[in-house]
Length: 277
Image 1: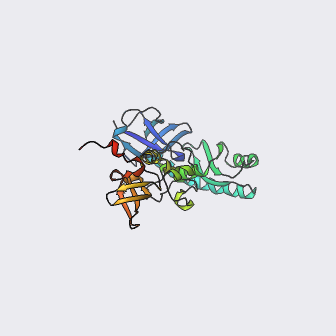
Image 2 (image 1 turned 90 degrees about the horizontal axis):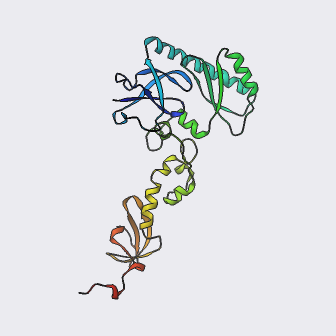
Image 3 (image 1 turned 135 degrees about the vertical axis):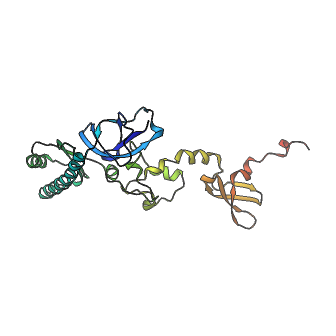
């Protein structure tokens, strides 16, 4: 059975339980989540996820969205725009060093959440009083998020042309360090290594283990090797194709050769080790 999935705030996927075979991608569903009653579009119907997997987050499906529900969603979106502008004005009026990123009502207007980023901790107690007085009979939440969470929340496309990983399938952020780039011999340039959030790209982790494993099997830079064209020195690696760039001793030509076709000179067998004949 197909398992429709809803994307909630911060890019999290929530699978609908019980699954509804009649729901397709783009259809709207009303559901109960940890935030309360909500409504949103189905973004994924994956046949291969028919079986419940450990760790899959779920929300309780209430019903397929009706015409009235869709009308209420349009009202909710308009009210979110109004609330966002109101909160931004109050932040500016109090001179708070925080940047409002997104504003979200629950479907039943019972809760209003303001997501913001800030370099330092912000004392928003007076702001909260202002908002509580403005949006009566509504629970107000002010939620600070990081810049990586901001990218996950707003979404977008990476330099690869695909939708941001954090806004699609990534469930949680992994620690990313510059060592991951160094291990893979990537250009250590901020514009090449940084994602839309301004932090190191999450995808630096994807191929790291594979590259490190291959790297252990290849001769290090500067190693002397014997090639079909004669003795040479390793001057570069092509990890993904398990190949080497070598500089020939004879004429200093640089060639690209599969690693399987070279033998480190230090590892050559002695004449005594050669097989007879």
